[in-house]
Image (cartoon, rainbow, N blue to C red; front, side, top):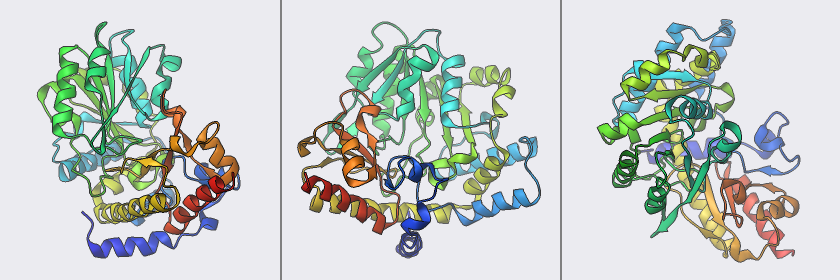
Length: 395
C-alpha cells in the first residue's frame, strides 16, 4: 500500500499536469472529440514511470527496434513471473508466460484454439466493450449475463451464469478486477464460479489487466491460483498497459496453467508473438521489475481522485447513483434519475464538452449509465463534474 508520503508526492506531481499539456492531437483519449475533455478511454493522464520511460528511450538510443528477441523475451517473462509472486502470491513459471500484442489478441487465441467449436461466450455485463463483439468477429454466440448489486458491491449473477450452461459447455469471460464497476472478486466468488464452470465442462478467459491497480481494496486473487480445477480450465492474460500507461506499445502476456494448453500453444504460438512489440517488452520488463514504488504512488493518487470524484458527485450531481470502485480508475454511474432525454453520454458530449463511455456499449439494459475515467489531474476532474452539473442546470 502507498505510504502517506508517497501519496503527497504523487498528488503534487500528477496534479501539476495541465489540461493544455494533455489536449494534444496524438492522444486518442483527448482527440476523439476535439475541444472536449477526454474521460472515456481507459488511459491515465499521469504519464508512465520514469524507469519505464528510460527503458524505452534507452532501447531507441541503441536502435533496438527489430523483432522481439529471445533474451528480451526471457527477461520480460522472468520479470512478470517475479511480479506476480511478489504482488499476488502467485507462483507462475516464466515458461508458462508468453508474449502477445494485447489482451484482446489473447482472447482471440483463447476462443479460436482453446474452446469447443461453436461453444458460446458468456459475458457478464456491464462489460469491457470489445468482449461483446465476439459473435461478429468470430461467429460465436454471445450470452450477456447482467451482474447484480449485493450490498454496496457489484458481483456476478451466478445463477444466471449457470443457466447459460443449460445447452452444453460454454466459456466465461472473467474480467478481474472488473471493468467498469471496479469490483475485486473474493476467493469465495471465484471458487463459486469455478465450480459452475467445472460442472458445466466450460472454460474461463481471465482478463487480469487491472490487477496492479487495487487501490485500497482487497488484494487481487488470480483466478488460476484458487484451485487445480480453475488452473486447468482457464487461460489468463494481463499486461502492464493499464497500470503503467503503455497501451500503445503493444505488449501483453498470455499465461497457460494447463499443461496440454501450453503444449498446444507451442505448436502455433510463434505466429502470435510477432505481433508483440520489442519496445513494449522493454517497457514491461522495467514496469514489472523495478516500478513498485511508482505503482504505489499511482494507487495512492487514484484513491484520492476516487474520493474527490464521489464527493463532487454528491455535491453537484446528487441524483447520480454510484458504486464506489474497489480498484481500477473507472467509475460506473447510473444517471437514470437525471431525466436526460436520449443517450446520456451524447448529452454530456454535446452540452458539457465531456467525452464519456456510453453505458449502452457495455451491454443491454445499461442505456442510462455512463463510464467515467478519473485518472486525471484533480483540477481537470473538478472541471469535468462542474461542466456536467452546469449542462444539467441549463436544460
